[in-house]
Image (cartoon, rainbow, N blue to C red; front, side):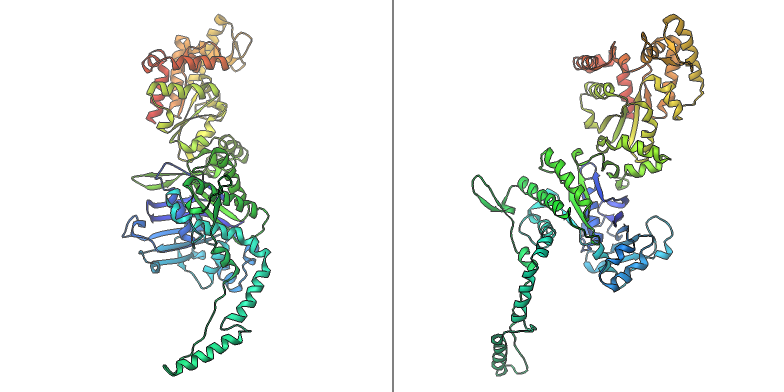
Length: 592
């Protein structure tokens, strides 16, 4: 189905120059005042231009420009445009199903807005076009048929005006218009009845009332005595059936007290809940419809506000339903509950800095394609990261291997710095094993997310070699195998045929690496490998693993609980003295 696949914004508020992809369902995440709402407003404006304010211009000497790419306009979609002239107007500007349009504003008046379409024959690249021409006759109507005026659900600070009576241009009016479509179709006989009344009462009615015609004649004769040459007629306008619904109010009744109030007289939380309930109801209505021509954008600022967690999840599912039933959904959010494994891949992280203004990071789905070759690797990495929504709400992501690291590292950080890592926008994310570190770091780098990994020492001599982070046959691994071979007879552990530790009844591989790291020569080799991996953004514990840092003898749930209790009982100075590796690791992370 066709959709807006890309939006390009220049000089609009804090968006100085930004391009971001859009999917059928696109969450926008980022800190407060990052520019998410501005992006939603820009999407609305390019499809429904209006007069801008002076404050909408980042640089008052430069124009505001918003361009949109529409993909998926195939022959079947074009054939659905009812007007032949409109269809012929748009067809030459669709290349391989793609159409670019843009709006430019040079001033604050509506007349300063210019709508343009790309010069398709001169734009050979896939980037934002540089060659444009004014809309030809019929093209605005064709674009509107494909992409009607977006339905923009504003943030709560704008709700007073937007959520009251069903006024023209408000969210409630737009929602009710969409919801009433099947009702109007079901009562087509009312339209026929109104047409009959219109023919009797209106001036140009085919069966205009004799009484009204007599009034026109008599009143004109009377006027002739005072002002010759003028004629009067009484034209009684009859509204369309749609106007009956538009004139209505939405009321809310408290079933316990019987109190009945207009919607805009309710509390803010109740208003937001009802607003989102209408969206969910609309999803149910649209589930059974088949309108392949119209793809309306639903733009929502922070839909999760004032909703309890279950309500947030239900709303998320309703929005997904709408995205599959004729709507394109783009929303800003601060809630991880609005993300799921299904939509995390298309989430766009929005930021804002002094040098660049609003920025948009590459979404996960695009980053996978750019970072990794091979469909199998792409899908695997997407699966591994797609469920880890924490990465979208942090400035720095720390990958770790398992639940021990995932539980102890944030706790140790909090005890050392007297603040949760969340407050420093740091997220510790467990991906279940170090074999995916290289792929994950590559994808996060392509998304422009600062990331590093914390691994056990064995990673330096196994997966780090396979993934190319360290030389496969480097001097350090040769030295490590020699040291392990020397230690083996003394301690009685088992080595694989490749000279590296093997699990056995008495010794685990982790214990063997700990033994290696406690050896004087092994310490030097481990420290060298540790330093080499830091250049690839991986911290490998030179002590062996995290249990060697805390001094724990065992692994498993009981051991984790014991280590958590130990850390909670220690102050920052004690942790730094007794477990210095934690402080060294975290200082390195904070320096990246």
